[in-house]
Amino acid sequence: MDETFHITRDSFRQLFDCMFEPLCRFLAFYTTDRMIIEEVVQDIFIKLWEERETLQITSIKTYLYTAARNRMLNAIRNEKRRNSLLEQWVEHETENRRGEECFDIDEFTLHIQSAIDTLPDKCKIIFNLSKKEMLTYKQIAERLEISIKTVESQMGIALRKIRERLFAIYHR
Image 1 (tube, helix red, strand yellow):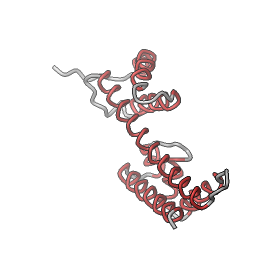
Image 2: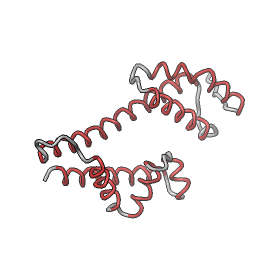
Image 3: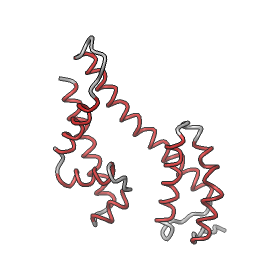
Image 4: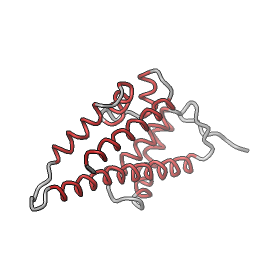
């Protein structure tokens, strides 16, 4: 017989207090960056609270560990993408500035902002809400009164266009 776990304010607080550290220890197998670990664990608890009315959870522990693992893998993948762009930039700068010791991170930041500025208005708004205001896709969808799928689609477009623009700049 499947029992669905119902989340109340009290049960949520108890769950958070009981599971926060074990989830952090679990995620330490993926990274030693405590800040990323805590951010991931907080994000899954926020999602759990926000979606408590619609989630059908039969095993809360399984749900939390699976959500933590998946979100951590996404965070690692996103970090690798950021690092790849930075590595491409460093490689380009190394080729163009032989003999010089420093790179201009401000210049790189300006190129990124320039790429963001060229996005279509809807993409730019969604991208900024996600990356600058750190809103979840659900929060963006609610704020803009659009579907989460639209947010996902627009973020995909934004990221692709930014990557293409930076690639064009650094591979001339």
